[in-house]
View: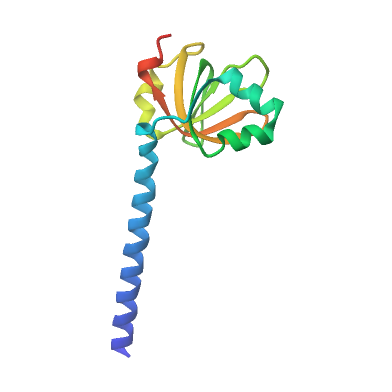
Length: 143
């Protein structure tokens, strides 16, 4: 009975270590986006217009791709410990950029109507275009 218990504990430990290693690997890949060259660079207004004109085509082109979007800041929000930048467009809709937690210091220096470039993973369109795990390109924020 004790041998079975020890064996079970060893199996649980090995399983836990495997799960932990996968979790660490998945989390570390989130920051790799910062180093990835974007597949597309587009203004916030043009990106929104492509989704409005033909959502299916825009989904095929942009969804799950690392893209760079540039435009002026409409709003900076904080909800449930998540920081979000909404970029201006010519309509009431916008481009919502969920900012990576590592960008907190840069985010604190940004102001409404400031022109910025943001790189993230496009997730699609729900009245606004959604980008996740975004990084702010400080080299291009002064245009």
